[in-house]
Image 1 (cartoon, one colour):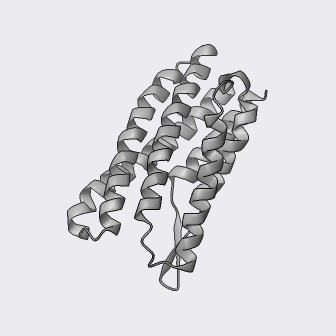
Image 2 (cartoon, rainbow, N blue to C red):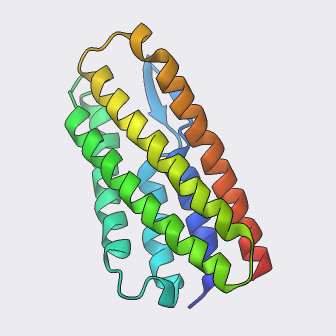
Image 3 (cartoon, rainbow, N blue to C red):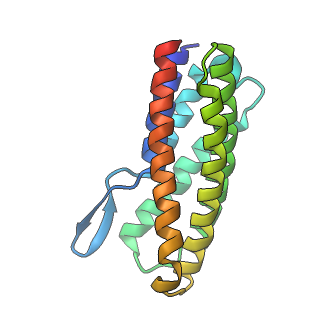
Length: 181
């Protein structure tokens, strides 16, 4: 068990899965922080977290499934950018929401076990993620289904900002916890 390395993988996993930086090439947006890299980092963190993930094999297999799923979504964006991927993206969003909730619950326990006050922050952040991810999933589904940009602009921006802030706060919190351990 290498808890510090597991926390590092997890912190970077949050940054890759929850922050999207895109470049536009020939009119197409290309993610330079593809989600599948973050999911691979979550998968690698599983072995490093030792007893905290023991008895929870879904904490290992969900990231693997999500890595494949997000790589497929990312790749299909290149191959056929006009393809309707809303059902696939919605499934990924819901699975993401569930995994992040359980992951932050476990990380809060790690903090508590090591006498850190960061556990309380992680318990709060999990609800921010659940709410924001649910809003983003529903809005994304509606947007790809033809909802107008004006109807969804405010909730999209609000949820995206909440996810960005929460992702950065989570990574900073995890790096701080890593130093405390």
